[in-house]
Amino acid sequence: MKKGLSYLPGIALLLAVGYAGKLVTPYIPHTEYVIWAIVIGMLIRNLLPLPKVFLPGINTYELWLKTGIVLMGARFALKSVAALGGVGLALVVVEIVCALLVAAWLARRFGLSEKLGTLIGVGNGICGVSAIIGATGAIEAKREEASYAIAVVLLFGAAMIFVYPLVGHWLGLTETQFGFWAGLAVDNTAECVATGFAYSDAAGKVATLVKLCRNALMGLVILALAVMYARRGMASEVRDKARFLWDRFPKFVLGFLAFSAVVSLGLLTKDQVAAIGNLSKWMFLLTFAGVGLTTEVAHLKAGIVPFVIGLVSEVVISLVSLGMIVAFIA
Amino acid sequence: MTLFGRRVTLDWWSVILATALAVAVVAGVVDKVPF
Image (cartoon, rainbow over all chains, first blue to last red; front, side, top):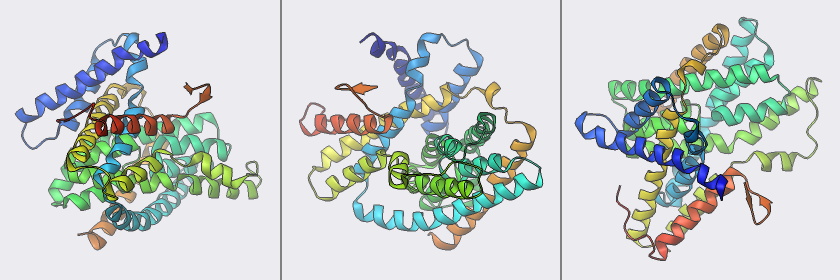
């Protein structure tokens, strides 16, 4: 009970910051509340001494993110999930292969360890921090290598929230195109969803769905890497592969699909679907405030070589993703 | 965190919480949710 109460101040702060972002938005034309929730959160975290009492609650933002994604399933008919997800999966496979190859090549060229290159590739290609943590254990990389890779992913994730919508508007991308772009190229799930919604609601929906395709493939890619490193005697062998895959499968994706199925079967009224959709948006409001409140600029130090590799790799992935989207998505 | 003595991961907590919210909507506990 006491532990539960310790989360309350931070959760209240998430709500206050997210809501402040929502209140500010009408006064600043052509912006979405997402950006302001994150900016206000970052200002508070980096300019004010944040009392420790807020920290447990602030760190719950990943729960709100995943709950928001599950609830968001109600805003998708299964047909659209299959249509968008099918195209998304095909593009995601190309994007992941590209990310791994580019990071591996750059790591070799700059004399970084092969495992750090793999971790940066995994972070850029699949699912940001959780994929890096998963892959670190599987390929037996050093903790320091994981820290570098995580710093790279967080640094560029934070930058992309602000840069991508500007570039998207400048290029005149449609909401669907931008959603695919953010879903394919932005690393961490929270930042990816934020980037999509910073463009528009429709773009945010597409970005989230495409990102779920990347998340769903996380186990498979990490397993492939673990097997590859084990064959070369650089990591232990994976014994129970089915268990390995299940442990790394993001279960909230199942919740998302279940919600989508319930709505597609017509089991809920229009008002109920609208209410669940709006609850999902409230969850995301808490999430975006959390992204800002947990972004400490002083901690985004990746080291110059991992930074350069991350930058080049991100630019290549962004361009490749953009090329595929302009070619295949209307 | 645990639920009925069993360790529950964050992913499953998100599914549980989302389901509880949806049930509250369907049961009419939460009626209209503006955003």
